[in-house]
Image 1: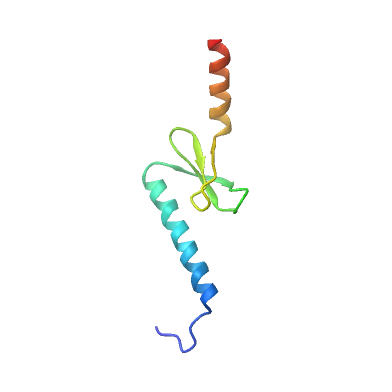
Image 2: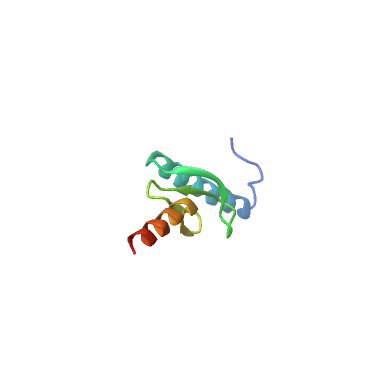
Length: 81
C-alpha cells in the first residue's frame, strides 16, 4: 500500500538498519551459531556465539571469547606449564 505521506527518512533508515541486523543474525544462526541472552555493551544488539566459543555482535563487530571457553583455555595453559 502506498503512503500518502511517506514515513520520515530517519524511520526508513532505522528500519533498513534493523532489517540488516536481523538478516545477519539469521545467517549466523543458520550456520550453527547460538543466539545468546546477552546484549552487546556497545549497541545493545543480541550477541551470537560460534561453535568455537567466540561471541560476536553482528551490528558493530565487537568480538570476544566466551567466558567459559576463556577459562578452559586458561586452565589448559596452566596445566601444560
